[in-house]
Structure formats: structure tokens, C-alpha cells
Amino acid sequence: MPKLKPGDQAPDLSLASQEGKEIRLSDLWGKGLTALTFYRGDFCPACNRYLHSLQERADEFREAGLQIVAVSADRPDVERQTVERHGLSFHVLSDPDHRAVHAYDVVYDAEAGHAQPAVFVISPKGVLQYEAVTSGPLGRPTPDDLLLIARGINRRRSAAA
Image 1 (cartoon, rainbow, N blue to C red):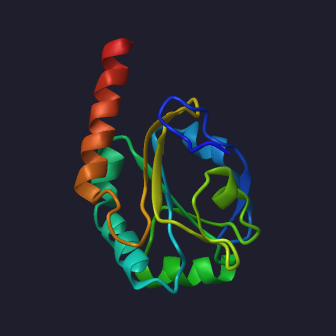
Image 2 (image 1 turned 120 degrees about the vertical axis):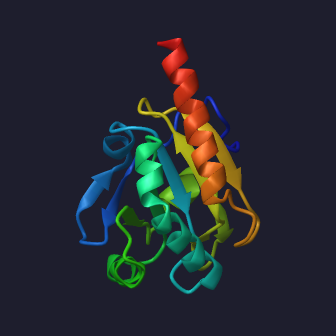
């Protein structure tokens, strides 16, 4: 499968929320610009710090018109613990069968099913606007980077309308 790049249609599938409810990705990105963030799992200290840093800026993301959605291979009960520990207000979805990890081609550890840390910014029509895939837990776009990206994309969309 070729790597996804800006302009490609984002893979759409259903994943379980931390409450165990199935949520379709297109239902989320249909509500607005979305940063789909893959993280390795609750076991990864750098990933936990990243999720926490995103939560600290949650109000700024909303003001910039960007919603955060996080995905890992953890089971919903583990995702729930992550959400509670960090007080996360954004969707955290479970991909224990690795469908999203494979669809977005971010496999880090095929045997364990962990994802490479990655961020895909997706338009409300499901078109990839930005992608960043790292080979380890460091080097992801910072919250400041995501705010700049979201504001730039939304400015372009407003000018084109």
C-alpha cells in the first residue's frame, strides 16, 4: 500500500470509543477539520506526554477549528484509563485489531500491533491536508505546529469559498 499523502482520501472505518461504542471516522471529520493522531499506546511515556500536551491546548484547538482524535491499539478499557488519567476531552479510539494502523500505513510493531506516532489532518470531506509519520515517539508536530497548520488550512478554505 502506498503511503498516504495530502490530497488523498482518508481511509474511513469504525473504531471503538473508550466506552465501547463504535464511532465512524467520517462522522467525526464531517464535523470539522480533524487531527487524527496515532500513538503507540498507554505504555509509552512520550505518547502520554503528547496526549497531555494536546489536552492542555484543547480550548485553543477548538478556537482554531481543529478537533483532536487519538487512536491506539489499546483495548477500550485501557483507553478509558488513559482518558481518565489525563482528563482528555477529545475522542480516544481503540484499534485492537489494527485495521486503522494498517489502513493509514503506520505500523510500528507488526507483532504487537503498535502504531508509529503519526498525525493526519483531515478536511470535513475526508481529504488529507497534512501528514506526519515518525519512526519513534519523538518528532511529532507540537501543539503549536498543529495550531499553525489548522489556522493555515482554515484560512485557505475561507479564501476559496
